[in-house]
Image (cartoon, rainbow, N blue to C red; front, side):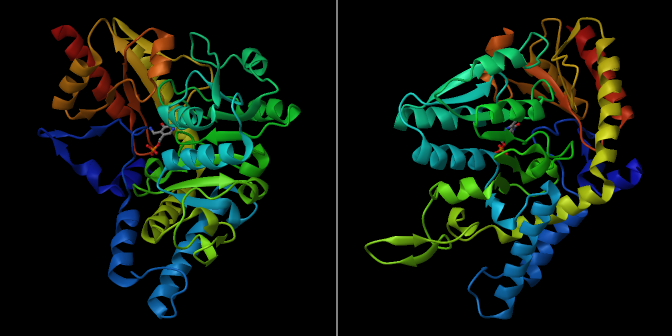
Length: 403
Ligand code: PMP
């Protein structure tokens, strides 16, 4: 992999921050965009902008073609069986809300349970609470070890006759833990319970094959895999998407409407009410093509080197404690330094041009489980380098000495 070439594809990496070269280590929050993605967006607005579906004119047909081709690109990227299983959403959050709302409406009554883990992002907790308010659905929570690994035996014990869905994070945005999702799905199959995989932090780091995994739902956001914001994907097995009701109503998702009733459109349109983000979908497809050209396995191996290097470098800093030491980890290092408040350290690193994230990372229940208020988090993407990790380590040492 030619990292200099890859870096040159991302114009923002050439920026300076307070006259220092930008060291961007906040990739779990969002990744930067390669030139081809940004150019795709402007090219579409300049040449192909027109509302999709049902347009008789050429521009509309071209925009429709681009949107539906993008669906096929996503389908291929995660190896879904059919393009009908790919629903475009506004992001990972909307995708989980869609499943929570539609799945629970069809299948859940008061007292039914959704099984999650202690390391979930709020996006995989709050939508179920909303269903708790509406339908009396309850969350069951599988525990993790102090190292940040799911305790798989305890996980299985949490399954009851009321468990209607298992909804788990693939890679933790805080701990970097790679959860054993194959094993989780295997266990779920024994009890005939469907599984939703939150792939918001894995789609950009590791190859995902939904048929091989045999998961029932999988969700991710485009902006975390070098694509545009405001765009996401819900993968769902056709048998589930056929059974669950639409999430929102409006144009596009209907086949016929009278004042008395609506007949819904076929998949995937049944779940895409209103004008879709056909420019976002095209730019997401460009991002996925970009990633595919580098090769997901190359990305995984390179980022594993970055993680090992960062773990070694940061561990050597006096008073630094890494939060999350699972055996299987990816691309994320959370840490605390002595009793320095994460906000203070993050602010001082920013003055050195280093962007990391501080706080609870939308995982307050996990923070409570770990007995901390927040962490500093450095997270890596394919364009990061060992030199940047050196700059981070030096920066932390400097701040640490100041306190
Ligand atoms: N799940 C996980 C694990 C995440 O890290 C995030 C984003 N931080 C989300 C869900 C939600 O993604 P979005 O905000 O793009 O909808």
